[in-house]
Length: 307
Ligand code: CP
Ligand code: NVA
Image 1 (cartoon, helix red, strand yellow):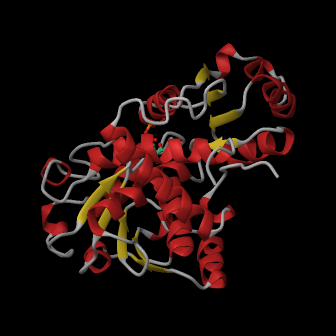
Image 2 (image 1 turned 45 degrees about the vertical axis):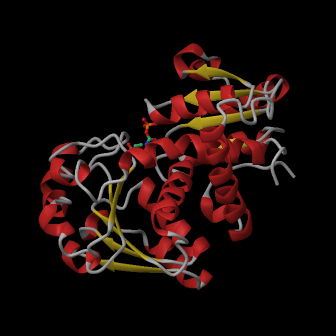
């Protein structure tokens, strides 16, 4: 079958583990030699469809393909017939004749699934309203490069249980670690997500309304914007999520060597203070860099040159 990278819950633990191991090796090779693997994807092309803005995802996919000797085509809906009503299915059929894989950042996850249904090439989820799996591969890689294997460890997510949090929860199950979610009830995890984790039986999701309780002793504290790109109720969210700021006082409850992660872009002194994001716990720049290495592993796997 076609190797899509749609969501972490749709992949098995062994495949995900191999992807992370490839990413670590690809990063080390690049640090030793800027031309490492520079023909791995020679002659191949990747289309990047962005229905929402992006800095990290666009640059990391574009540079990653270039480093592997491949090409990219960046597409915005306004430049495409997709934006004038050509169907996703027909777009998928046509792109399949031109390029070797498509990364898509869009609104509803059903749009990514529809692309995958009609494409004969791999589709990569570059963020939807519901999930952000590429980000979490980079986050797991970052955790492990600082703290060793994530299996059996404990992390805390503080704030809105958004797309990034959901993909982290998928990872908790696939990699077998505990994720504590401190969220106001209105922005908490869905019953479906909790029931799925329960059924899978690996990993553990613990839900609380108390950030202090969630971070107690954890080895990694994670947060994200209070309002994601698809949210319109920005002021209401800011009011409800204000008690969920990750600041120095909250970090003091975590393990003394806890990491701080944020997928970025950050809203400084809203969900995270300058003191934390610029402080000794923070690994956000490594995390951003690892988007490149983790996605190169995903690209190689999707296009069949890595196992
Ligand atoms: N973290 C992330 O996906 O960033 P961009 O929106 O800049 O791609
Ligand atoms: N939760 C954020 C992530 C941005 C990379 C959003 O969807 O806007």
